[in-house]
Every structure is written in C-alpha cells, then in structure tokens.
Length: 126
Image (cartoon, rainbow, N blue to C red; front, side, top):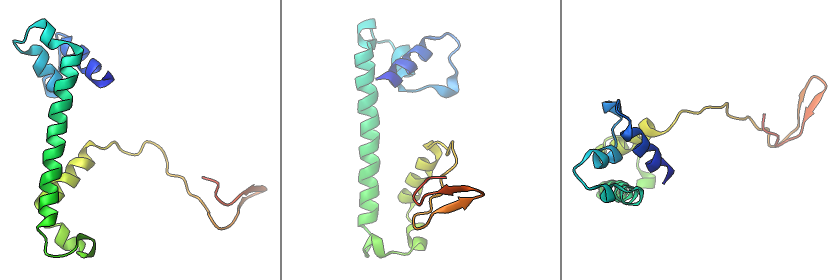
C-alpha cells in the first residue's frame, strides 16, 4: 500500500518523469472520476494487474519446462539455456533485483579463526 501511495504522490507532481511512469500514473492521469482514483481503488488495480502478470508468466514458464522430455533436475544447463521463456524470466529477475549493498560474510564453521591476539569462534560471521 505504501508503494502505491508513493507512486500516487509522484504522479501528482507537475514535472513527473515520463520514463518512470507506472500503472498508478496512468490511472491518475486518466479520465476516471476523482472517487475512482482513490488510494484503495488504485491499490486494487495495481495489485490485480501485477498479479495477472505474475500468474501469466508463471503459467508460461511451467508450460515451457513441462514440455521438456526429461526431469528438469536432470537436464544440463546447456539445454536449459535454450528455453526462451526461462531465460527471459531469469534475465528480468536479475534486472529487477537490487545489487548486494553489503559485503557477504565469511564464516568458518568447523574451527576457530585467529587474527593477531583475537580469537573468532567457529560460526562467527566475518
């Protein structure tokens, strides 16, 4: 709901960036009446459209993987790379996911680590 509020506030600004338009922008700029542009209505429409896109993509992907003659867990990656819907879905997921903003911790699970006079017990994230 908060994301929809943010989108609606951005759409109300006079110099809204055309490249950053979203579903909420289109609804608010449409010829709908003011009551039809309420937060609840916009939120419901955004949720419905997003859900429909997700379900359609998931169904297509399931169908593509289901059309394979082999068990997907036993297929070589080279074969999976030839599936256009799978490749597109993975690429879109990578495009939308944020980069890692912090360092990944290293953890010694089986023995203590020593740094100078410091002892780091096994299992301590570093």
